[in-house]
Length: 375
Image (cartoon, one colour):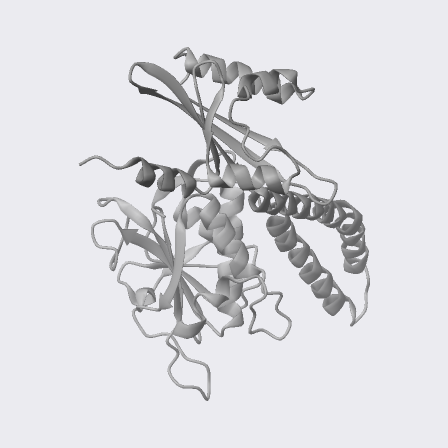
């Protein structure tokens, strides 16, 4: 079945960009409706048929136009498969950007070019806005890192020397500010994973446990595995998950390995390929309707919470190419063979009893954060 010239012409006019067909010399043979409408709207020739596209580029004062003409000639000579160029086309009233794409095709033994210009202004404006926001975040990060953190460190040192009943609350408040600054820096700088090394799940989690105010809570190690990660960023994941557990009334926090053979069952990581790891607690849990919102930077149920903790967890996890989700706890803390880590870095055998719920509340369902290595 062959299409009539009218159907082909209608299809050409329906193209979303400004399109033109050039012959092997660069002469414009035909333009579509969008091309003609653009010319009319901008006070120029509405058609341009018969003009030489390459000659117009050569005559331009813009070096990009000359480079584009050279690229199109190489395309006609078969030295390139296609040409794509982004360029600004501003007017006194507004800023505009376009992409020009060109491809070679043959018909009846003759070579032709199809040149199409697409308006990418919305995309470029969005990119510029993101760039400005990133520059602002970097400036904020610099203020947090130097102008605030340095005097804060001095204040913490002086506060620890004070002999007064007010000294401990003061130090605790300063340490809290320091932790908030640290969290804000991770978010503001969008720390990417530049270098990884082999880390041990249990060792990294226990080190983070010692950095968090956990009181008389227990960390249970139900299994461990080695994997590639940025150890400093991974430490932020554990510290924030541990703080979240403490804020939600947990008495026991469990870490373990998600078995790659059966994602629902943890294993010790020694005989099965690991699909990831989990952090589970016996606290109040997180309701199903809130499980996506908890990773928003503005979400917090604590009176003095910043909402940054779980947002940092998600950002670091995704920076590694992993994924994170939260579900109800499965009772992993009662797994046989688990060990309990103590605040001083030691360990003790875990009993198999159930964890206590908060006094005066229903049985806690707990929360389980699963970090999987395949996003």
